Length: 74
Image 1 (spheres, rainbow, N blue to C red):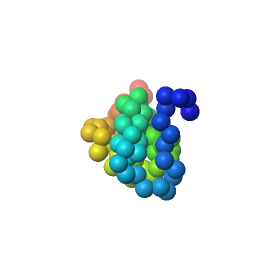
Image 2 (image 1 turned 90 degrees about the vertical axis):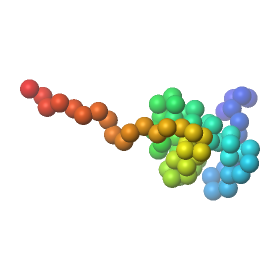
Image 3 (image 1 turned 120 degrees about the vertical axis):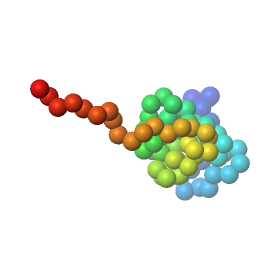
């Protein structure tokens, strides 16, 4: 990590106060860049469920599941 990126808490450690807010904002930024919840979870060292909760707490509107509907090849 560079000097501008805040250190994330260790996996398994409870997130409270400033650490929770910082982690939620980091998760929101990654999600806004197009990452999936699962890839954000891996990057911040949290479970899928915990990452989803952090995103919701950060006020992120989650994307719909799956991709677009594909048309059958003619």
